[in-house]
Image (cartoon, rainbow, N blue to C red; front, side, top):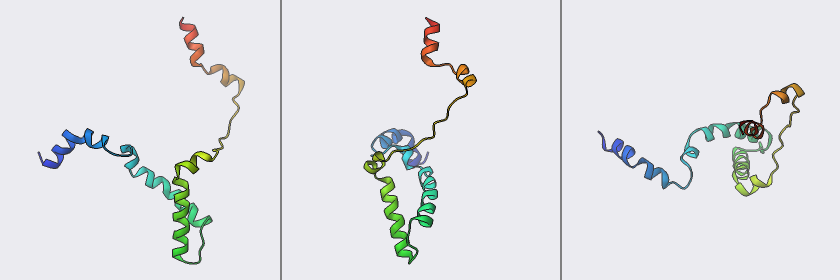
Length: 102
């Protein structure tokens, strides 16, 4: 067994515990999800006078969107859908099911 594989298998959990952020946040999914934001920032929220200006504006927008303090101040609007009465009858709530079991 190569030494690198041995290190990962035997010491992987201690290595993962020593990270400052969860291991899931180190995946490429977050980078791929930001591509949509970068495209939007470039198209609608940046100066098109030069590449430096465009990249500066995109970078500043990314800093704003990743700041935890500012992200928590923003209200996220979610559309609330009203359920049809027949659908409401089909939904079993946890509190209702626990009453039936007693």
